Image (cartoon, rainbow, N blue to C red; front, side):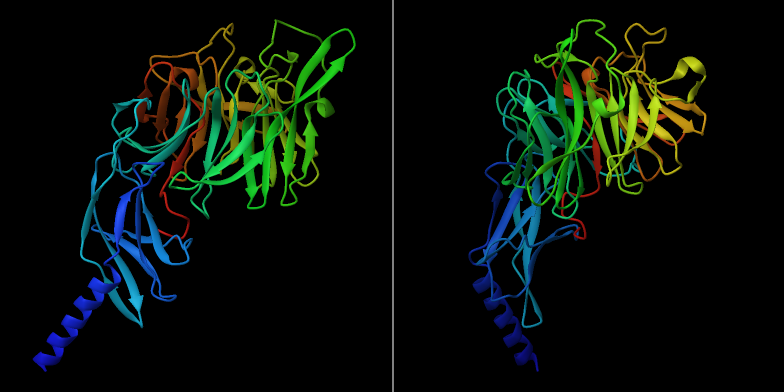
Length: 444
């Protein structure tokens, strides 16, 4: 019996050496903090990677002859111990443990400083956030502010919003011209190793986009019309594009609002008077609606996705009375409905308002009123000139970015600050998304 056992062990070791002799693990070419692990396939037998802590990373299943797994979630120059595993004829076969180190980050990436240390019970170990600067980036950070994933945008290119697509684990963002001199807008999708997956031309697109289903993209686009005696006036349209690749206009600001003349000079886009300045497009899957935000009208419009009909208008152009009357949101960004039915916004505030300090604001909505029920600020107090974002997390925490101020802040359900990062000077923060994992949904 001992001889049989010894023979089996020898056979397994020999099998291990044969199947994993061509095992490689190294940083990817485009993202040095992501490790690509490859080894030959054996027929159609499954394969995966296991880390020392028990994390299982699936085969990407995108190569005909080799297993390929991407290991991510680690900062630069971190040693990772892993092994490749296969199931052959119902038997588990694994490689010897292999230790590999993530690469060095490229020069020029933004630096983040942790101002309020993260507690152990924060929801989600990572956040996805674009930075607008020279150059601009799309980044994934851990809660200590270390960069885990990055993509540098080209010259005069920037992205306000980035999302992670759950099913694939890919990252998508709407790229535009930083100087707004050219219409170069496109939605770009990148895989975890930085490879281009998809490009979608988004003509006249700006600020934000949405991905309501796997076959559909939506985005904000400029809608320029000539008004007699006023010249070219810039409004917004919400555009959708399905699997057929044909864009269709769902709704235009010109359908609902009336241009009533110029106020202060507004030449943001260089192609006409910046009337509405749409700055957000948020998809609400449960309601089947989009929320559109117009900065200059201090108004939020809810749109039915199927028909493009206006479901509701909230803010200065709406009919509800603000309670208290002087607490209506101003120049707001990132509207969303919470599970409790309240409206959450990043309330930028006008610079000439009595209280011009920006804040996160939450409103209870009734048939007749829009009642302020809670605010959260960024001590010692800031006026955010541009951008800003807020997200309600599943555990009741509130996650936010503070645009031109360069702060990322999380609050607990009572509104107490429990985490804060600050980015270096000359970097503006776009939207924020909390990430539980960097792997496709259903995988670890």
